[in-house]
Image (cartoon, rainbow, N blue to C red):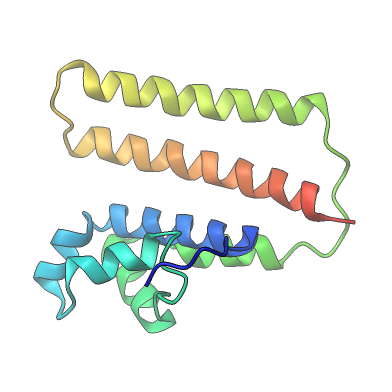
Length: 146
């Protein structure tokens, strides 16, 4: 079901983390072949337009165990463990954002250079894209604080 109301930022970030988890497991089609769920359901879990579809916690646990990476769990911990106010946005934040984004960009360009993305490329992309998610989540937390 598509809803015209935009998701709150936290929910967007959660869907992004879920999408990263699905990708780390090999994608929705791979997961559909090893679970009793359709690849469309996995797409809905990650789609911003599917406000009613959220990956169950039990599935998050199983998929993180499957891929060996606590992607969604780590996002939740990072989001919830902040108890002290964050510093205001700064030019240092701009540099961190530029650095992480440039690293991911370079990794993606290198992966595409031979027109064949292999397992090592995917691992490097997952790592760099998770780093981007972390910095974006951190900056979003700075923006959202009163």
